[in-house]
Length: 439
Image (cartoon, rainbow, N blue to C red; front, side, top):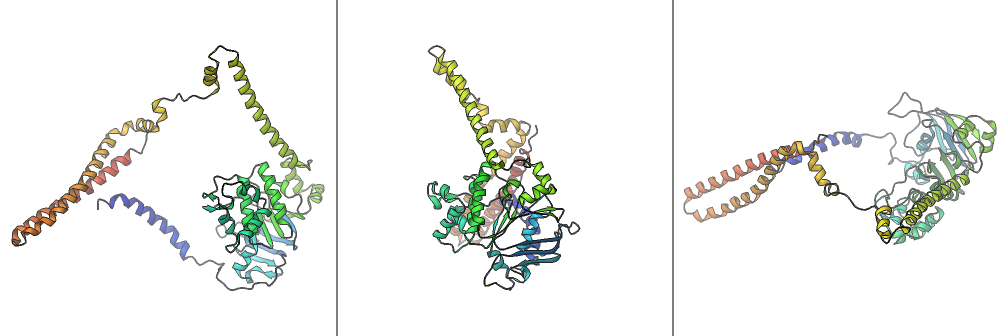
């Protein structure tokens, strides 16, 4: 009982979590990945959305798509733009069959996707999302997730196509370099290019880009965009984008608003029409600038250069001032140009700060400490009493004395167990009270 009490809180949390998890496990999904379906012998890559209407199950009254129509020809690059909540990403989700539409059809090479084998369908799609998921393992393992049977040569070819091979080879072990979960050692652009390689290693006929560059800075966006331009060659591409600089080269741009298509055309056509797309260009200050990517990159480089120059100037000024002084110039440089560790003992050790914050709880802390000592002492005492149990067998010829001694030891164990339970309870209670810091 004494050892079980501290774990009751964890058990209660597990029960609470299980209450939410079990209904999900027991839920029967409308889209069953194990269901049978057709597999096309040769996929060309034509995609067609016909009269789609859709609302998410969690918000059935909010219509996300309203009579949505779009055709993507084989090898065509189509960009979908619009404000947040206009239904851009929903179209991609319906193509992947995360959901089925309320009405209308999603066709792939003139076949309804609901009649196709779900596993085969998703194997034909390469998806690059806004946030790249990096898992614990090597670089090669992270790329191989896209196709479990991919060889090392296929992984390298996908990385070259994704413009990732060069920086991967600069790693200490190349493709065998170990990555932590989340890819903390990688920049945003590097993570995204590994995600692109992961999508390309399965050699998909269709590429889905769901705001693949929106979370990157301008410099990383350019590197990733170059990789995407190479990856899109010869594939049907649906590209959901927020930054309009990434959609200029699309064969068709679809502008959505509140689940409906309001404009369709190329960049130049929509720009000349001065409709919804034109207003979005103006909002992003792109309406009169066709070289925004170059200018933004130059601006980034200029800002970086100016920051470096400013730092150099401060160092030079500091050095000049100290060079003009007396023989103690080097000491002055150390004092003025370098940060000296002048922190007090209390500032260097956060434990002292924590103790100061817990000053009102010192009585609780003291009692909790005493209870912890008691719990620690009871353990060897119990072992000592338990070892005495083996001594009673020397009285085997005197049953009454043997029984009396056994009863004494049993009572001793019971007493120690009760003390352990009480001490553990008060130890946890009083020490937990110290975590409630009052500022």
